Length: 139
Image (cartoon, rainbow, N blue to C red; front, side):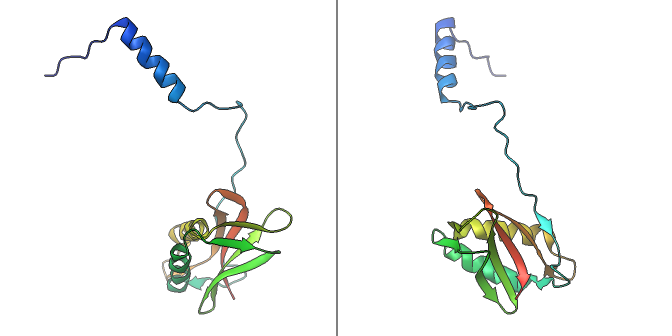
């Protein structure tokens, strides 16, 4: 059996003081932000083969830190067969995220929305950027 650790009061107070400086502090008690909810949908009856969607996700992961830029309402980031991964901007003007963050969003859609028959459709926000919506659609 291990013996309990014993610390002197000054040592304990020094540890607590150090730990309190290392912990992040909220700037406001009301810092919650609205999170877009991942949605599975067929975009008008057009679920896509998961293999085509996964090929695009793999391509976007390979582009890693390259910027995936939305210029306008809807931008195609990748197409495989008749399947596209697109980005749309919730705000005004253009927007961008690293392609790996776009890929993470599309992968979440694949992981959450694939049918037993091997088809997928839906959307989610790019990781770290709620204004850039990533969708898996039919071209």
